[in-house]
Image (cartoon, rainbow, N blue to C red; front, side, top):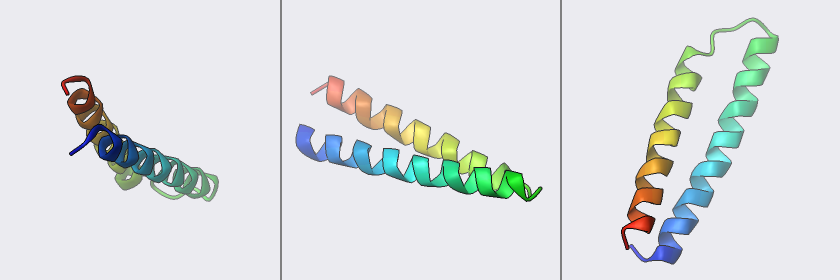
Length: 58
């Protein structure tokens, strides 16, 4: 992947992260479990770290 493609992927992951955060807030306000979505946030964070590392090592 080129640095530009990596940056684009990071931006997509950031947007997904924001969306999931919003969903968590909605579920919390209604008293529903957020465990699965919190796990999804962790997965997204790990992916972002991986792509940032790849970007630095290029």
